Length: 364
Image (cartoon, rainbow, N blue to C red; front, side, top):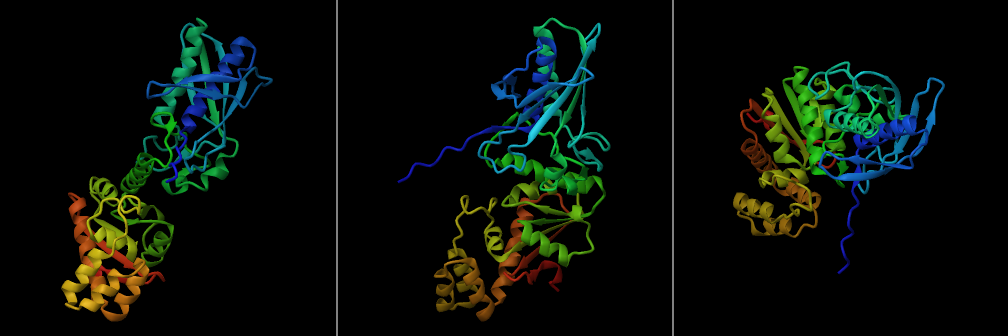
């Protein structure tokens, strides 16, 4: 059996910004650009970050950049250039000011950690940037006013590949990081994005949110529920239970779950995380439901022998479409068991052509 490859960790945009800041201060004080700098992560660990380029401009400001390394995480900001512009002036105390420049997004909607009209630099990165700057000043026994501007040269372009526009973050990316380390395909990061999206929907007074499992199901849901604004639609991936747990804390009037039949089967089986690696797509339970509903052993065996949910769906649609209704009811029941303190729950199932084959709101 082949050995499972070890996934490489990386560092966040916040860590990159802190490293660029530290390099700038070293350059200004020591007159030599560093090849790398050590950064204290919020986990208590340290990491050595290579510096990409450094320069001094006409205003005697240092400008240094870092190339972000996200490791094996499929992050759109992987290999992005993250920079800092730093100016220091004598003072009787250390006064460190952190701002965002070109390519760092501006928050325009409430509900996020950063307030509207402020630059999208979260508290974790700000703490790392501040600590990195203070460390250099203390090492050199200096008191100074330090003005730090974080920038991302291609931030506006990269932002279009993120959820920032939907969250109301415009003109650039967010400087993020809770620990400073990027863990490949981080569940925590995905759940944090879901929570941010729900928080924005709540803060903008939306009473309905639509939870979809991916881009295609979201696109179809947007066509069906076209009276709702874009901020109402939130991709939850495979996080069925976690997203309902979070959504139910905001007090939305209606939470709608929209999914294709394959995901709906898993949801109907009360599976909290619907990824194949977490819960293999077994059609045995679906075949048991078929047998209970129809008392038809041949029909049940056909479903059990199906290679995919799509194949099973084609059999069901042709021979006994009432089973789809049964899956929808069970999907709705599972959602109710995961969500607490909610108003109305709605479940929608799409067939593989994007047609609605179950909608709990249409039940008389």
